[in-house]
Amino acid sequence: MGVRNYLIEGVSGAGKTTVAEELERRGSHVVHGDRAFAYYGDPESGEPLAQPMNKSEEDAIEWGYQHWIWPLQRVRAILADQSHPVTFFCGGSRNHHLVIDYFDKVFVLEVDPVTLTGRLETRPDDVFGGRPLERTHTFRMLESRSDIPRNAISIIATAPVTRVVDSILSYCDIS
Image (tube, rainbow, N blue to C red; front, top):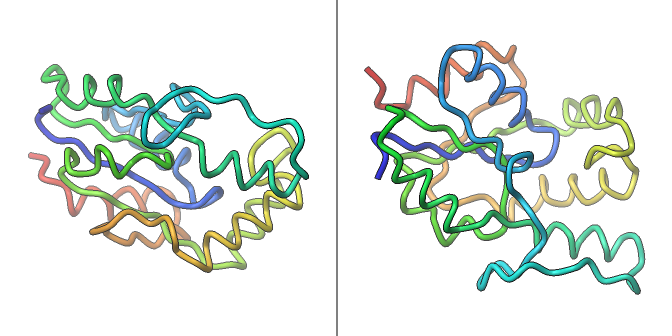
């Protein structure tokens, strides 16, 4: 395993990318899971899957969410990399349960519905959460809390990003 590895999760619009960028600004090694290597696949086998074409838009959004995964071999290789004292993985995947035990700590960024509405309403349509049905799905996930990793440490992500990152770092074993 790498020296220290942390996962930062949350619903779309919770601030994962913003937190990742602040961690990078501070010199941390960050893996942008959604941007760097996420793909649609079977959450158990990792087999890549094509999005079904015959689904309603709402069903396609749900299918996409349930099949948004990270390549486990690549994740494990990064987790084992000893060249960085700390690595933060930021993003969401529906197969995190297969690697969650490799992380020293897991954080979930928490936002209230009003803050989330403000963030999602300013997103362009080509970024997840920018379209009305994607926002509806995101609010369902926020309310149900159905995909929060076990043992996650809740971080209130409505404060300025510098304070959010300070809060995360206060839990990390970084000297």
